Length: 109
Image (cartoon, rainbow, N blue to C red; front, side, top):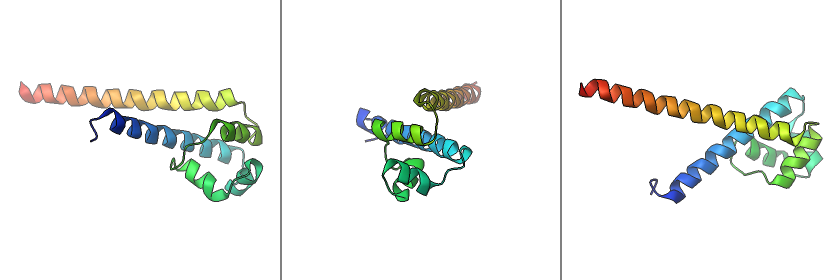
């Protein structure tokens, strides 16, 4: 039932988790921190960090704040990066839909 609100919500959640995870990984790597070091700093396993970075598990606010502290970044920076990534994704999706609509109109002409 992908057309239902629940289906869209699950897709949206999965996309959000992947974007957060990608951003977390980029920041962690830029700070030259390993998954193990970050995991120890926030009290989880390195496997849990892997799941966060791959978007398989959602990061709680508490863990996100702990990660920001461990990586020495302000939580607003992390959130703004995520919002920028979401905006870029949404713009790309919109451009794709517009291109598809233009192609369809050309085919119908």
